[in-house]
Image 1 (cartoon, helix red, strand yellow):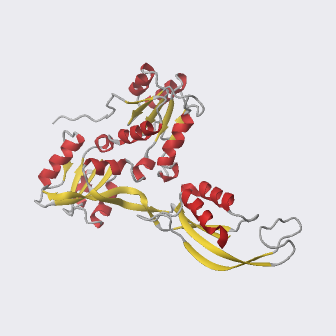
Image 2 (cartoon, one colour):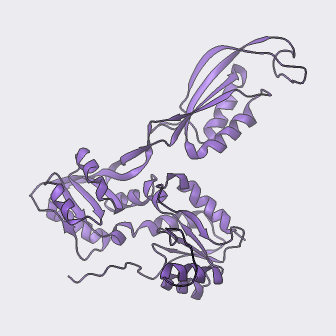
Image 3 (cartoon, helix red, strand yellow):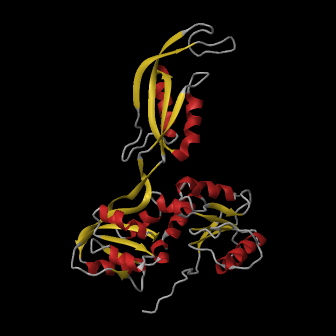
Length: 366
């Protein structure tokens, strides 16, 4: 039997929780990590209808994009839907996992899926984030460098853009003297040693620090390993808000509207004035991302797709790009496909089901 924690670990590896925004609440929100999984239900939101669907289909793990517990719960009295959902989940032994802004910010996540659906090419993060990279520096005998280096790369270090196994190596002399309790790999205890060593440097994502340090300690021959870890301010191109890419060929604004409407099954699209300009370079950001409008303009996007744009923000664009508000639910609806693919490719011991309930709270009369 598969434990709930195995699913949690898999999803957290794909989109590490530390990649979420500070205000967010992601991961396992309700439930016992050690419980066996009966089946999984995937949804964008968690409502009382979703809980009832889970109960009827014998589901004991719900994987959702939006966290049901977003703010601190001070009481559980059933006074509102959030409290009722949590109480019902606990009563029926249903665990709840949320993958929210960490899945927004990760390459291969929500915005990558939007780009995929629109057939955009040469996609990159619209606003890569800083503070998610660290540098490792280790001093190691040249005789053990190759095996050591391979172990560090295997732990996930050394990736820069389209390149992997990147490092810098400097030849030098290390000194040390072991006391009477030491067991030196090279030299003799009580005597000063001068040994030729390599200063090995590489970078790694912050969330892999534990794995990288374990690889260092388990593959270094010295009794005491000298290593440094430095935080970097460099932007990590694989983590960020929104994405930007290009259509295979430029199309008119009207053609673009038709493409977006068909792709996302949208009844109505709010947009800025049609100026008879060609559309090719597209910025996207699922959910409420009007704060990224200026970033899209700065990246010379012809159009920007997002949701929850305020009235005055349509003025602020000043015709610098074609701005589309396609709806919050509509922009994130394919997030369910991401969860489904991750789980079904890894596990075959339980059923993974997409919810049949449309949780979009907004209705349209067009």
